[in-house]
Image 1 (cartoon, chains in turn green, red):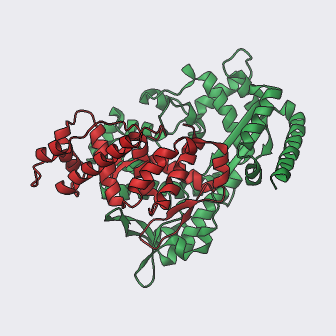
Image 2 (cartoon, helix red, strand yellow; image 1 turned 120 degrees about the vertical axis):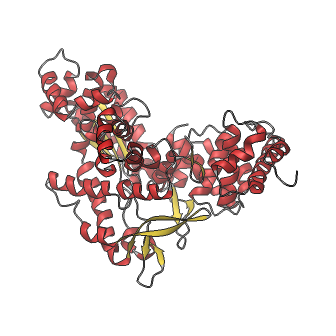
Image 3 (cartoon, each protein chain N blue to C red; image 1 turned 30 degrees about the vertical axis):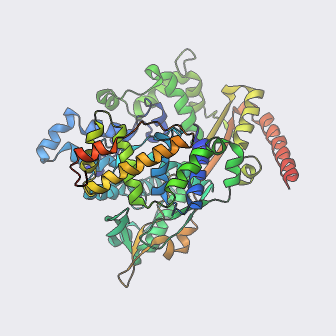
Length: 330
Length: 200
């Protein structure tokens, strides 16, 4: 039940809209609020389980306002853990399927079959944690690479990301006070369908709240990516993205420029492996492949499509300037 | 403090700890960052909760993840079951060049690393939890040792009391070094009496 309830609090369009929750609220907080709601209490009563037990396991230590026992922590890790959480396995496989790509697929049956609860030293004591038998190591490698590929090829595709940006612009103008309600009943009334319908209405009515971003979404007149700041650029100027963005903002105005920065959190490449001789080793000590899984990070700069040609010329000049600075540094 | 400043502070905290003989794993950084913020008043802006092994910040863990991704820190692997040591990453100089925050707080960083560089994770857990209890509202000085044992039943009373003693020692040393610790005297003796410690 905890696994099923983990994502109950997702807003319309899931993570894309999460910035429009009140400060410090996350979808996990909403999941917990729903689990504790009178509507769900009936179900828990029938099943003879406690909503608090479900809530703890569903959202984990980070979001549950109380302590979890060692066993609760372990059970929660099975659902939301960085390495082999069911949530992660599910979203990679499901998103891959629905997006029509293969990047997110991996041998999940073998992975699940070889998962083991193993001891791990934590401070002064031995705690139990999720690990894997040596024979499942390649399945775990494929999961972690699948995640990397899904991030690079799908989740952070620049066009997909820019639609998140326009969606958030729309929601900030369309929602009362620019924020989603954290009231459970209001939350449950609002789905992707209501938001899509509102976008369509606003797109055709110039006086409607959120008309401009709605129009961009419906007519596919989204901002264009004109630069991707790389590690090499940052080696020359650690603040290269901010610098380019502020130059573009000065030239075209704040409304015409969008900067998108993201670094993948929780790689999950370090987990215990039960070797064939019965000893336990870190995965990273046994797998050269895992050591090579890059941490995904992007820094994109987007501008209004009407300005993109001029902005690209500016980016060319900016890069030339960076190269000159690199020459000076050398 | 913005994200970059937080990262630069954590980087130099880990480096100072290692220079002072620390293993410099995540737990060492977590606990000393808590003391840096809540004892020495460095406004790093991390939100700490009392977790299984004392004060812990999920934000700080995310910062370390991000820093590793940006190569500001590297991880030196250790044999199972030990966690990795945090070392300077290839892009550490880039981070330092982007903010002077570590320079601004170099004295508290050096002070804390000097005092706790050789402390192991168990000591750090106790000292950091002692500070957490000290800062808890509604806990009188005399009840603090008892409260620490209540929160951490695996810690014997004598060791809980010793943790308050060490915290007091650090506080006094900080004060004598010209730093301004955020808490006043802890009145250790009063706590030991209240906890029924046999030496009192």
